[in-house]
Image (tube, rainbow, N blue to C red; front, top):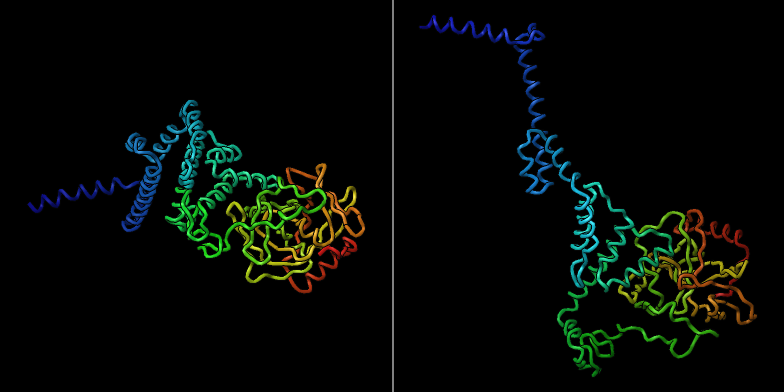
Length: 436
């Protein structure tokens, strides 16, 4: 029995040796085993990558599509089936999806973040089917999908973009509107039930001032919960500035700063959180309702003092930013074919606004008068009765655009800044010091 067993094992070993490929016939058993193990490791690595690829695809497709492709043998086959499913859809489906994108609206008071996520998902689905949705069309879709309460913000965004030469990207629109939504949401949470009572019962009477429409906790008058926080009653109602008066239609919306020196100006000076494009135009808007000169251009200051703490400024539409410095600024005022060099003093530096604001009220206090007529703002010195500037009306605002110069060193301090000022002084010529 033992002999039979020994005889039966010899042919098996001989057969095993005969199945070894001829290329490995000369290898020892140890070398042959090492090569086989290396091949098996490669096969295992391939299988792991194959399974990982399939799992990645499975996690990105719908359950219905998963049932169709899970029986396919290779990951390449699965991907080909997925691509065929999405890219092979009819034009009618693409048209229907575009119509769904255009027809999706955000209800008043709804979560705009969820609304934006829905629009982005539909846009991405269109792109996977070979029908991309361009940025300019998507920006327009975002605009028209928002409720009426965001119309002021959207108008401000488009006007500011047009004046500064920016293109409104979908990402920036989503950022700005989401920021406004968060501000409103937090404001509603902080106001609590008292704010709700004011909105739902306009006949409620304040125990503090005896007026209707609010409660004592929200009363702006002396003794109220929000004493001194109401809209500033403009002193300009007592009289008109200049011969032609103020053109309120160009600066009806004003903002107030919670500081001794109040800063009221048009809400078109919305904070410019979108990065500025290289080589932008510098814009100066002459505003009859502004109570201070304000500029975002740090390099134009010839003297500068940091404000600590900064002056907070709140616009009428709820936005806020800060003036972080104050100083003197040289500007060129167009006067027909020539221009007049003047120096403005006590100019606030607010880097977050989109363009500079020149206060007609401040120039009036410095001995200059303004006349608004025939589509232009004429500035003249009262002492000599000479015209020093003519600013044309563009897009509803009296504005001046200057081509931006090479990168300035306005953020520097010390001797380098003084050398730069001397160089600028020589280029511009003598600058009048009579405007304060």
